[in-house]
Length: 405
Figure 1 (cartoon, rainbow, N blue to C red):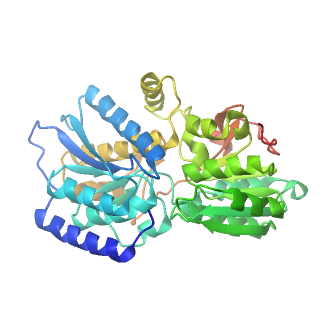
Figure 2: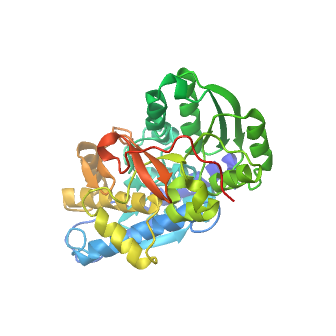
Figure 3: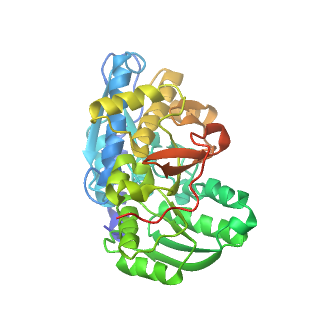
């Protein structure tokens, strides 16, 4: 699963060269043919859980849009491929979508790890690339003009709202020590690194920090090392599988911190509560882009449709983010009233888009310009606890109760 830079670069270069020969991008609006949107998602492998959720979000958006007449009067078709959570495969998939399948538009995959090379293929072929889950800061330092992250901000900004909450506590009630076990991942690691720096400025001593490899499945040694330091707080930069795995190990080791923050994993709704046990979700913090009770346009319809299709389940954040990414692309096409990649890109740089996440807008590099919300699991469901104007619960569980068997 780990990247092999030389092999990846060679493959990327070859495929991009081939893609450049194929050309793509613009098509006229004088047709009733369906608009085909190409997507590659990790439907298997390390990121299968969020990848499947993203697929659900895209498909619900497609069906709702088509039921409402389509985009600029044309029905929408999705061509979704499985990149197996592999960087080489995602490059091959997007190259094929552009050069062989000649899709009209693209939507992004899941994770910064996969969107990094995928967006390079899109940019090289002058195609707009709206991605639902690729907020690593280095995504936006390459001078790309058609890359747009359909969330509020990059991952290094995710923990700000949590640090603000810690700062709001009376000094005597703030945690004194913290441990930072973190996945080696371009999205998760910046969340942990930035939070550590912010919390150290507030006087929270770092007593343990480690970066574990992607694909780690046994967290006994990491959990034991954390327990040995007895931190008041754990900040876990995580994706889904490792986030669940660490909680299970801490539970087995009978060590429960007073405060726990994880990136990404707790946002996976029932998949997270099933993974760690519903009782063990109580009090776990995370930052989030979306809430099922937000009064944003179409949010209720999205939540209801998801529940209708999946046995009453609550959507995971990744499903909502994918739905929002598709809304962004839809708004731009409707804004310029045709499929012209340059015009779509320019329109997104100049306009704000209403999505189920809220209003999104972008800087010149494609970074979002808004702020995340602070969420906490309470009584078996996610609640927004900050900022106040969007909170769904006025209480905060602090300290976190001990793990339950």
